[in-house]
Image 1 (cartoon, helix red, strand yellow):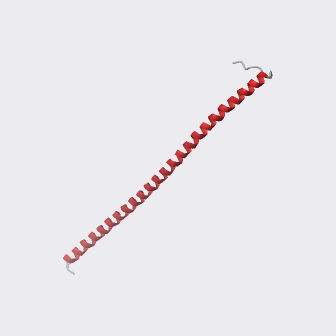
Image 2: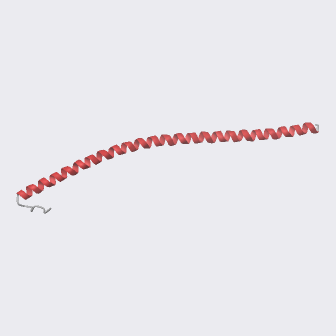
Image 3: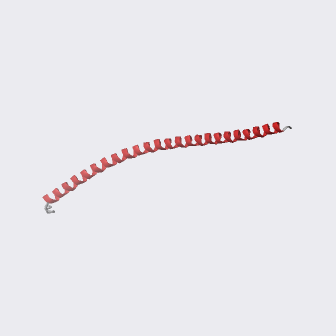
Length: 97
């Protein structure tokens, strides 16, 4: 082969090597991007699920708090009623305030 042809083939080989490296980098970047998009979607799904669970937990907490308030009020009324009955029966001295 002639030196000009050898030189051209070497340059072509270098250019092809650079092109292959560039394509490999691009493919890897696309793969990473796809992985990140998948991970982001999973995180968004988890966030939505957790938000729903939190809403449910808050609703249950509000119901429990309302029930606790109701029970507390009923117990206080019962204690007062029992104290009045005992006081009227002469079994209990009135509390000093």
